[in-house]
Length: 415
Image 1 (cartoon, rainbow, N blue to C red):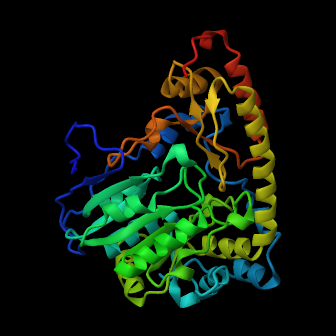
Image 2: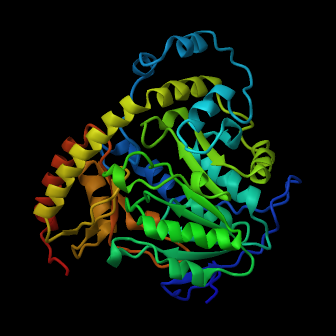
């Protein structure tokens, strides 16, 4: 079935294709990308300033500039103190790319490109590798731009994670969605918002499938390194596949989204050349102070990741006990990694009303299922995202306990 954005028919749950008629991205300013409302950012913009308890956060606990500088070695402290505020290397500073490359098994500094956050990396990859005559496969649910950016360039087919099987990915469904012009498949593990890490045998099967057909595999790995069980950690796609593209950032595992430093790791000189061309039309280069601070953070990775894993583990235990205690209201699949989960809300008021009531009456911010709606596939309408990566999580959970005791919600439960 092929479904267009302006159609109202209900799409098939297994996979749906969206055909877009926009021309290939060019440097001549011809229109290609359709700017759609970003549901998640719009929701945050509407409610974040009024929230007393931010339980929708997708990042780990952050730290101050002073705290971060306290972790700097003498070389990086000198680099910070003598930094001149001119343009930086569009690829990212050599020393930063070398440090990023140290986090991979096969990647060298020349195979790394830095961007102003992971979002810019997603935009650049999709416009560098996709054209109007191509086809892409996007796994859902996901971060919205992983879907809407390629859908503004070419035909896109969605393949959904299955909530009845622990949010796993059916590789046969991916294979069934492939066309002769399929150029790219996009995945995200640990997944936002479910926290799912794909089983290793399925991951390996997907790699081999792409290799046999020469398909690019774009892997959003911004939650990598903060797995609940390190044994479940998947290798970086760029390490195990010659046409693999790994997206990383300091935002999620390191708790430093304000630095706006992300990167792409890829062994293909062809893809890197195209990324450089697209980047010239975006932020041009990263901010020098952010690069130095990111360098310090990555060199202190063991310390920061250990701290943030401990916070996440402690909060996840609190959250699991909370949801189990209220098992008549919530269904819960324990996330494998990252710092977000995607529980099901079973009360008849519905998850949208639930989230609105919590923010309006109790100052508690959660993300309702509508934020993760897809125009490729039907998505669950009874779930919400909750983030457990910050130190103040317990206070927010206590406030949520109070909200659940509100007599106004004493309505009939649903099954």
